[in-house]
Image 1: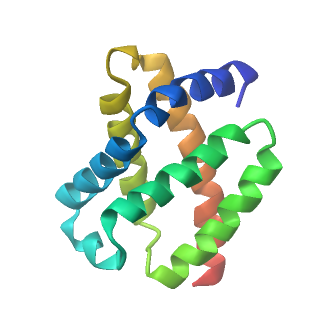
Image 2 (image 1 turned 90 degrees about the vertical axis):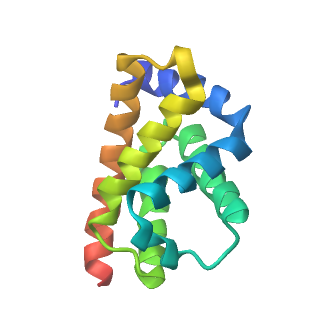
Length: 137
């Protein structure tokens, strides 16, 4: 991922942080609309889960320049998700839901270039997570 794309993602993330609670709620609302069967994987209050999601993404976005650290964190996250019952086929669903959520939260500032940057970042991260996930099954 280029420095330009990293900066683009980090700048756009400020829009999301201004609406962090809404973004978390919107993500899970959409996820459960698209795939109601995943609802059973979430034991906690969805408001709390939404905050955790935003916190994790925030950490990733802030550390994008240190990809080894980000990938290390992603591997740990994948190992936890195996224990929660997440399946490999859930990763694309989460990616589509994330991109949809970002587009809705960022609004008119959401461009094709920004969508491509976020998609590239998610795909790289999810690939690392999927590989680690498969090791833990």
